[in-house]
Structures are given as structure tokens and as C-alpha cells.
Image (cartoon, rainbow, N blue to C red; front, side):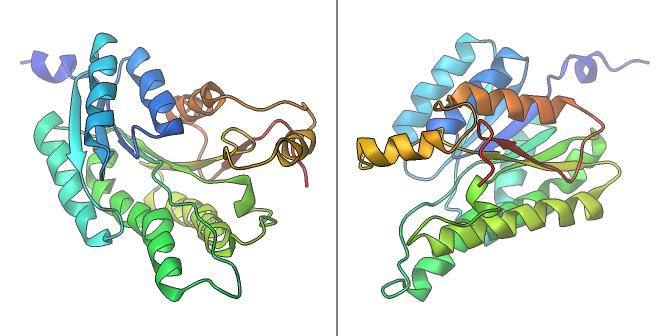
Length: 247
């Protein structure tokens, strides 16, 4: 006998840092494409609630999951909560990230540990905990990296750059370890979000380093994420979405 309830289940994506600049664009794209969504947040409950209402207008069921990714031990509980609610998991998107300066002369070991926990270690343990469920649906993991993971020329941000370089390496490692059932890829944005504190001169310099000579949009990243989520013959790849920034 065919289980009709199973057929009607929509694909489910867990997005960390869901209400952030890029997280919001990614979740909206997935909701438009028929996904239900688990939205992971740490402190931004009200912002995530507003996002949840917006996503539900697009027909998505949502689940708000509170967790501190500075503690990688929380990863297994996060996946359990998602699966308990939705009974499945198809896509894990490791979007949450810490970004702040760690100058060579002043950076602290505690800052390095904090950045690595959020940007690298928790994504690994989330992927490990999610693997049994992703395997059931030949799902995938998508990590949000950065062009500075390949070319770490961002002054005073050594911990951030090294964490993203590690995330790129982890993407390839997990692709090998979790294949063939689970695909693992990453997306590296270029000049999408430029901090408000940057001067107009510095902002223009960042944009002019790319071939396209313009700032990208969050939708450019969400399109790339959906592409990797839906293409079943790509794994172990890092997709630069940077307008052609080669240096």
C-alpha cells in the first residue's frame, strides 16, 4: 500500500543564521521553490519570527530552532529537533558565520576559538549529525564560505580567513566521506555585503577588483545555493559568486 503522507512531504532545509543578510535571501528562494524550512538562530528571535511569517506566506512550514553554534556539542540536538518536527531533512545550509577583526598584534586565542567554532567546527558536526537523514533522501550540504578562503588578503581578519579556508577544505573532505549518497559543496560570495563602516573609496576599490565592476546582490547567492541544492551531479566544489574577481 502506498503511503500517501510520505508522498506529500515537502523537502526540508535547515538554514543556520537564517535571518541574516544572506540567510533571508536563501530561505526565501527555497520557500519559493517548495521547501519547508528550519530556521536556526541564536539571539535574533524576533527577527527570525518575522522571517518565518514571510516564508509561510510563500507556502512554507517553518520551525524556529534556537542554538548557540559557539558550542559544537549542540549540533546533534539541533538535528534531532528538526527531524522530530518534519520527519526528514534534505538540505543542510551552513550559513551562520562570525566576522570581526583579529589583528596580529591584538588578536586573542579566545577570538580564534570562537570564530572557528561557528565558522568551521559546528558546520562539521551539524553535517555529521544530519548525515543519516540526508542519506535517506540523497540530500546535500551547502557551506557558505568566502572568496577570502582562497585568497586571504583581508587585513586584520586572519582568523576569519583561515576559518573559511578550513571550510573549503572541509567541503572537499566531507564530499569524499559522505558520498555517494550525500553531496557537499560550498558557495563563496564576493562583494555582496560591504560593511557600512567602509569608506566610499574602499567600497569602490572592492567592486572594481571584479571583472563585472558592480556589487552583487543577495539573490545572486540564493540562486547559486538553489542551483547546488538541485543539481545532482556536483559535489566537492566551491562556487565563487564574485563577479569575476581573480585576485
